[in-house]
Image (cartoon, rainbow, N blue to C red; front, side, top):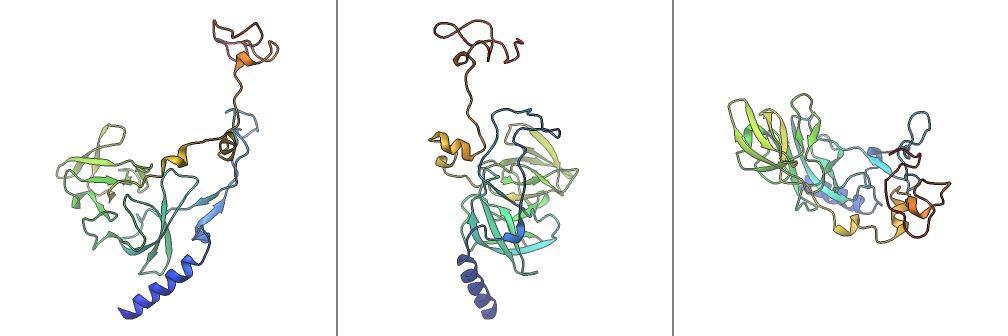
Length: 244
């Protein structure tokens, strides 16, 4: 037990002395489409530029029968609306990225599968979770990928359970029947500060890959059907190509 504590303290010192992202082996670069299709044609306008990003690979812990780890850091992810946490697994001595749950802090113990208790951040099967519990990161009946409640601040409410199925209420308000063998994380997903979503200036929109939009009434008649005229033009609305 003492050697394990000393090992964790040494790992914490090495981890917090590095720059973020913490797990460089779990990151990869990708090229943005910038609103273009496979032929290079612009299909979604007002996109382009933006800051270079690294994609963080998340481990949903679905392929592990049992996991016990400690949260080593909480990081910002530019590709997701929630925070992500780096998790150190005791068994295989490896690091993983997981979505951060609400009220998560560095040093928390996270468990999944066999040995997991009914505690915030732990991952269990729906058969072991009582009715009325708030969960997130729920798997689907057809695959092991977690596709429900992954955005920031979202959660799923367990309505009732039968012998083989569970009725849950999704963030959209729709009730769905899910198998009791599916896994879910106790608690809701973490929420970023409101200042993260506010642009505050035009330059920040350019960082986020958003290009400016010009109104049609502000253009010349040759550039847009709404252009030209004295003052603001009103009437029937047309597309830039003259279609209703």
